Amino acid sequence: MKIVALLKRVPDTEARILINQEGSGIKDEGIKYVINTYDEYAVEEGLRLKEKTGGDSKVTVVCMGPEEATELIRTALAMGADDAVHICDKLLERPDPFTTASVLAKAITLEGFDVIFCGKQAIDDDMAQVHSIMAEMLDIPQVSVVTGFEIAPDQKTATARRRIEGGDEKVETSIPAVISCEKGLNEPRYASLPGIMKAKKKEIRKKTLADLGFGAVPGEARSAILRWVPLPKSAGCTMVQAEEMRDAVKQVVRLLREEAKVL
Amino acid sequence: MANDILVFGEVRGGGIKKITKELIGAARRVSQSNGGAIDAVLIGAGAGKAAEALKDFGLRTITVVEDGVLAAYSTEGYARVLSDIVKAQRPSYVFLGATAMGRDLGPRATAKVDGVMFSDCVDVRMEDGRCVARRPVYSGKVYLEIARTGERPTFISIRPNTIPPAEPSGGNTVIESHPAGIERAAIRAIVAEMIPLEGGRPDLTEADVIVSGGRAMKDKANFKILEGLADVLGAAVGASRAAVDSGYAPVAIQVGQTGKIVNPKLYIACGISGAIQHLAGMRTSKVIVAINKDSNAPIFERATYGIVGDLFEVVPMLTEEIKHALS
Image 1 (tube, helix red, strand yellow):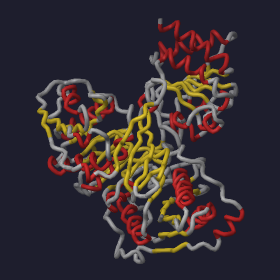
Image 2: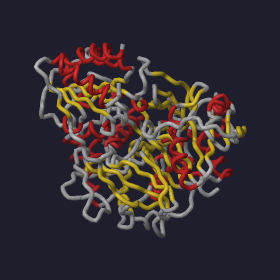
Image 3: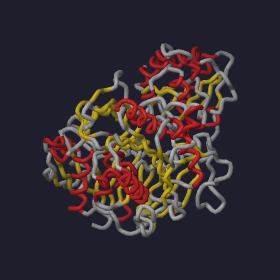
């Protein structure tokens, strides 16, 4: 099976995000960049599928990102992915979902694919669109926010479990397909020391837009960010205390009824 | 036509989901400024019955697509139907819920009509002749305001529980049927079974009241104390990542940056320290009550009301006092 796992470089969840002076974006200094949380589940699921199907199954990581993404790609290789494609081009600085989907779809088509795993969304722009647009461009089915994945013995279909409001859905899909991964799908493995050593020799194929056959950035801009808006400041907490805890609790209930009016 | 808004309503069990009324509320906000008409489309089993429930909301038309091939949800089926209707009716904007369904089919339908989509928006309004959407980014640590350039159909998915639901307003709504326009054989992924969550509590993303537990819960069994409080309030039960990672609660109820994003009227945080990642999931709650032994816990910076105390003492007392107050 040809398994593809998508990977995006994003700020760490701990990062303090502040709007820059010009109001044109966020302040970059001091931010630690990591593999998008949900993409870790994608890489892990790809590895499990490779292990399950055996034979000549292989996992190729595909990442569209700046030079600095290389070390994160190496981490995925150290986890056990076989090789990678790193699409890196100065023209791809702030791509919108259509551009990203076009580029990834092209790169993945050149590699060949059976199952494409990706995170449900990237924790920087939180758009959650690329996987869907890409599936449409590749003309294959998709299943989103997957918490369970099982390939059929004939490898032509799969069953996926996905999380919706009020419960789970069991979805039957044909293969090839795009599977967007949700927390709970698996526990991503840590890269072992032998894994890290092996990763140094694994191939990362670097591609520019021209290498993929694009004359220019695919897809013209469809939207413009008008402004960045900081979160409203907190009004301040009313700490409720009393001699007896019971009285403090009664006071909170009173405040919830009479002041906040939520009871 | 220019300025018209198409609402993709969600149907469940022959009725309409609350998000549908929220989308109409959002659409009214916009059409009040730009004079556009509001139409709706309902797809799937029970769509016809659901349309009857919507006919007093001042909509121009409601298109019902109730073909058997769409009885179970499928991305390709629903995206194809929605995109066909968008091509036929040519709305300027399409509003969907940022729900599991909306987030899945929205971008696919957008791709089919070569449109543009803004996901998970918390506000929409007209500004200089365009619909501007406000959306959280970096897990809700900052917002941006975005609008389309050009005239493509613009899909906007709106976060549940954020915009007040519309009330009935009368009007002459025309209800029309539309064929599916897609064969079963063309649908390659489809829902085979729906497994409801146990407990009968409201879904976290739709809940008005949430009682949530952190690492201080110490044990899975102790969540019973929170359930007791949740029962009295008709609330959903949530958990912090620390509680989930420690095995005290299932990941399905995790609230936070890599869990559920919630927006209740009342969020009661029990033994939760208030890490950035947790706040990212619940900071927009209207009222936050924090109970924590540590007076320096960051949650107190964000809470409306705070009690420094042991949750094992405070929560049962709170349950009794609320039961008393509500009786």
